[in-house]
Amino acid sequence: MTSFKLAAVAATAALAIGTAAQAQDAPSVSFNVGVASDYMFRGYSQTDSKPQVYGGADLGIGIFYAGTWLSNVDFGDSTSMEYDLYAGFKPTLGPVALDIGIFRYGYTNQEDGANLDYWEGKLGASVAAGKGTVGAAVFHTTDNFGQTGQATYVELNGSMPVSEKFSVSGAVGHQALDGTGDYETWNLGLGYAINDTFGLDVRYWDTNVKKADDPLKLTSGRIVVGLKSAF
Image 1: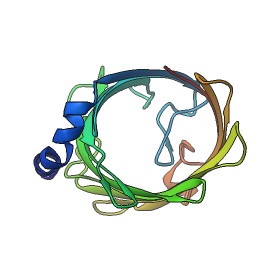
Image 2: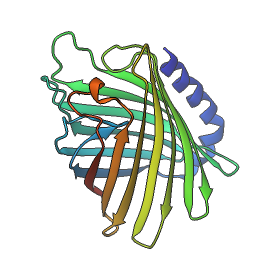
Image 3: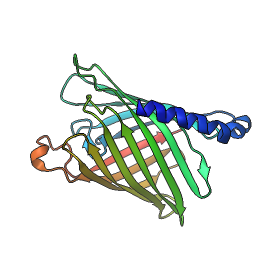
Image 4: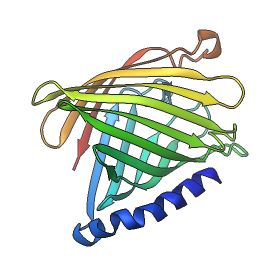
């Protein structure tokens, strides 16, 4: 119930912060679709090192947001699609931009008894650093993917424009799991804004997961190329 309690506390606190913004800001809706050579999530391929096709929609009202996102997955079984639902709010505290939210990860065509779905809470913060931003985030779930117990992911991230069209971004994260299996992951990428709608991303992903613990090489170092459209 930790994730639900986090969401309840966040929503209550946001009432005082966001009432004025709600009254002044009209709802905004945006969409995104994209393709990538792989679907990487915290250093693990979710598509068995094969291409990804995804799409999503977001609703914003002042500092509040909600959305959904879909992608193909391949876990070597009948599971075929991931669908995410999320909501939260983004207040500011002086120079710090906060992001407090809750996520629901769901999967279609699961094998009988698999029960891969789970909830996760997020607390993130970022600040301006010159022309770019640096940030940190903590994600926590009381029952991780496949009912494997509690898990906490901590990440440091940053981004910086290098020209009108190009930007660099990266992140370093630590995934803590119940029992054994903790690991570190990192990524570094170059983004290119083709125009106001389309963007290209070329990113290197890697982890410190031992080869003996990953016979399918789902965490081995790789370059992922993605094309995204946001409108």
